[in-house]
Length: 349
Image (cartoon, rainbow, N blue to C red; front, side):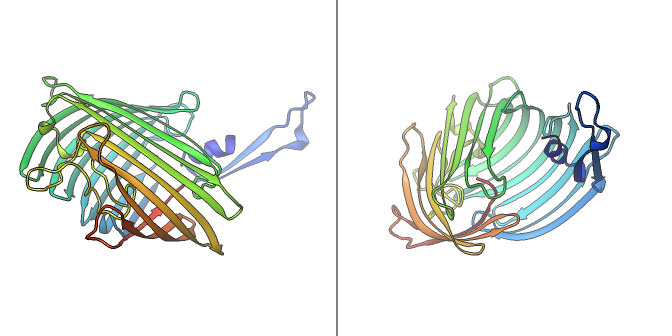
């Protein structure tokens, strides 16, 4: 446990725990010698790639790991793609001795294209992350200014959003999970007159699981639910609306293409989200595998939105960074589309 905890702090390239048996005390306690190799104080990265949800993409980043003797970190990154462009900087101050416990201050610029519109926003975020017991807890306060256009409607909003999120996972392997589960839940909102231009509260939860059916086969499941209580939905910017469709939603449909529409048929997002998925994956030869899956979900203005279905088959390759996925999905509720190709990477669940 001590070795894993030290490794998870991300300050060391290697951690070795050596029992000093020669100096065992009369109380039969064995001293432990900890040998560490520090990581480089700076790290730079550049990457290119392609994903169905994002299209072609390129990214660059830099991480400064030990700005002070107490291990303050600075992370800078920029990502450009056909769908979403971001530039982000984050300063982290570690707390205590548990991995992930920190105070963080971040700033971000984002431009994103939706099925029938786009959004531009900038914001700052102050957060406190702690791990009381088994749950990771994050308290945060976020300010954003967003200009968005969806269909025939344009919005401009300032939002001051306090929030809290919880995260927990029990995984037998964090990269390729055969048995385990994870749960994420978030609640945030804003109040008109306290910097925010609209009053709302929003909740979202994601539950994932994996179960080994045989030595070579695993069953994967996912359920996602979101709900918004909002004073005037028309004033809610695009980033706070729910959409469905895409690699991590209902395969067979374009990214964020499912949701309520305006009078001209433009997708404008909804108050509620429901998405579920079942996938049976088996290893065929060496690191190659195949999958069968069924997805269902949708976004709407009531708790029971119209649900769209997709089925398909996939090719899997187990790589050191995760499972590389190539899926061919058939949308059961879209007669104009025979199949849709989805490309992505799954890490853990």
